[in-house]
Length: 432
Image 1 (cartoon, rainbow, N blue to C red):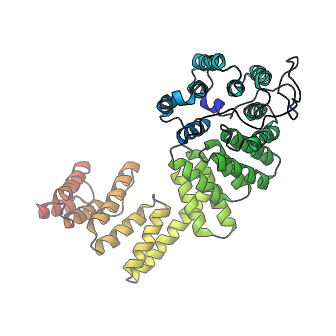
Image 2: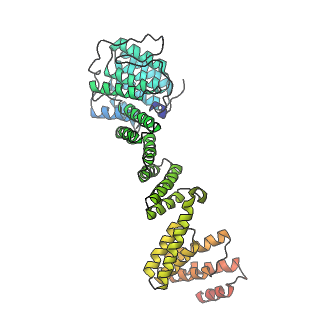
Image 3: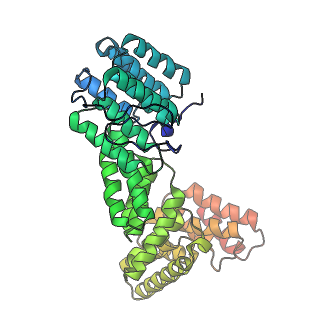
């Protein structure tokens, strides 16, 4: 028997078809299964269960796949839970891919409580989630024979429905019907969340994005941490032209370590284009910049790359005008904006360093000149000014004499006959 993954257990990949639809009160079953139809009554009460706060919390965490300390908490509650302890252990084992343990726990519970509908409901749900739908139908049938149609078995019918193509609506109806009999019925949050998500995906595929948005939000109300639902929410928001909303969703996922850089970068670009259409140029520039930081190169950015470059040059030229007018504060702001938009614009870094030096912020100035010098050397560029000299002066002014001398010595070693050799030697001698 193959090991079901947590995603499969969580009903994300229930794709095997189930033969025969369920009507009210029927057990889902394939042809020839002999499934009983329409029991005379649905039991309005669930099988008695432990209702302590710890037990409810454990059930909910297992439902939503939050497994931290689940084994230890289950061990603490084992005596109080009775036969349900084995059923919860089976669910935990299924999440962990322990097939043999799943079967062992289910059979232990079945032997101990052959009339308990929770045994058959659990077995049916775990079988359906693993793609064994005929087994699930058989478990439902056996549960009906043993206990009638209880809320637990009605819930299990809903889960089985979710595992067949087009079964989301019917599955959700059954789940809600089960909750109508037992509002606190456990193990319904995740299936209902997935039902709403499936309905949302169906709505978007039918070009009904508003309906999709409503459905996916209902899904997230039940299971706020579901990554698949959150990613789909971003798709729906983008379909509704709410690119900034989609960006916020993807940024949150990225910040939580789910590694959605590609999706985020593309959404930044789409948000930038949307902002341009709305004549929000500054916001568009910021999104293009973020798209580049997230991994899009100039070719992938398309027109965005040129828009960023043009805006950076424009900001730099504004800084030059402010500098020539003696307005260092404005010049600094514009040069900072230029390098913010295009970090590769070395001349803007150089201009910013000049302003910082004149404002007696020597270490920040040195940082800018160091960047210019290192990048120029890495790219084999010839600088029109002795940037290494400026860097050394800034370091010396910041009381970093050793670092200043090293910069000058490095230049002489690299270019012993360089254009600025005499200037460099003179400054080095002065510093020594």
